[in-house]
Every structure is written in C-alpha cells, then in structure tokens.
Image (cartoon, rainbow, N blue to C red; front, side, top):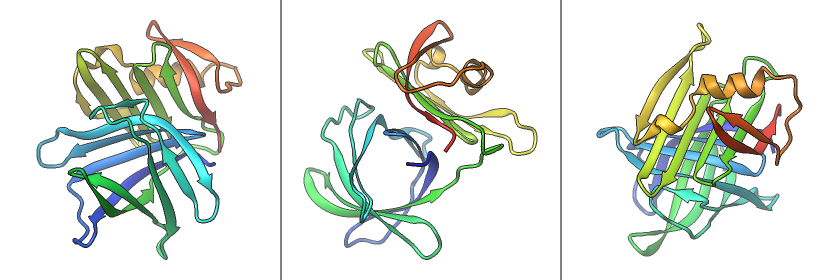
Length: 215
C-alpha cells in the first residue's frame, strides 16, 4: 500500500446531509495509521487515534482500523470500504455506533501527500512503552501520546517554499513528544535502510518502526 497523507473533506451520517466541522488529517504508512481530528470552532481534539490498518479485501478496498491508542478510549476496531469518486477523492462507507446506535456513514477523503522527492521517506513509529505514535508523510507530521496524565497531540506542516516545519496544532503535555525536525533529522539523515521492527532513539526515547518506505 502506498503511503498517504489524507484530509477529510466531509462526513455524512445517513440520511442527513454531509458537513465538515473539523480539521482532520490521517497518515497511512504500511499497515499503520495516525489520525487527528480537531474541532474548527473550539480548536479542541474531537478524536485522535493510532493503530493498525489491516486490508480485509482488495475489491472493493476494505480495511479494519484498530485502536492501539485512542483519545476517547475506544477499543472496538472499525471496518469500512472505499469507492473512488470521479474527482479522485475517496469515499469511505461504513457503519458506526453513533450515540450507541449503529448508523451508516460516508466520509470523503482527499490525498494531500506532497513529497520533496520520490526518495523522501514516509514513516510511522511507536514508542517502545506503547504510549506514543509519531509519523510523517510528505509535508504532514503527527505525534500523539496517551498516558495516565491524559492525551497529547502535535501537528506540524512543512512550508512548501521555505521547507521549514510550522506548528499547526498542539494540545496536552507535548514536551515528551519529538518535533518534526527531531524525527526527520534522526531518521532521514542517517545512512541506514530502516525496516519495520527496527528501533531508534529520538529525544532520549526509544521508538520502533511500524511502517516505513519511499512508496
């Protein structure tokens, strides 16, 4: 599966109309994902999670997302399938227990992957203690952590012209999470061919590669 940074364009709880009240991005690398959804009006985290992205079927593309860490403490995996829209966006179709009632939904996702070159690495890592995930695909970096003290998240976006990373969102005790620059310098400037399962130390914390590749 190619690595992707995707942005949600809308969500629809059938039979109601589609809308979008969040700034939602997700990173997909190999068999793992990180997802961050921030309410536009309040700037609060609506939902964030990370875990496995398991292929259930090739046609139509059908996936299962597990919740290794979840800001809402949800643990039941989500299943959904995708259809390609005429404009290139992806329509996700599934069922979710909205307010405890199974409800059909549709989400539209757009690929926003912007790599500096075809050789640029995409990666998702998990801290060895299991509490945190960090990832980068193109110009999007996400870092989230779930501890007894609460939930923390950071998002950074890379400037297209200046190539510098800009903090887009942060919430919670983010001091223990690396920045995009720290992660990139540790991973992408070393002459090493990373593979899933390898470990690396970033900011004094050991991380395990869960997904990595140039695709």
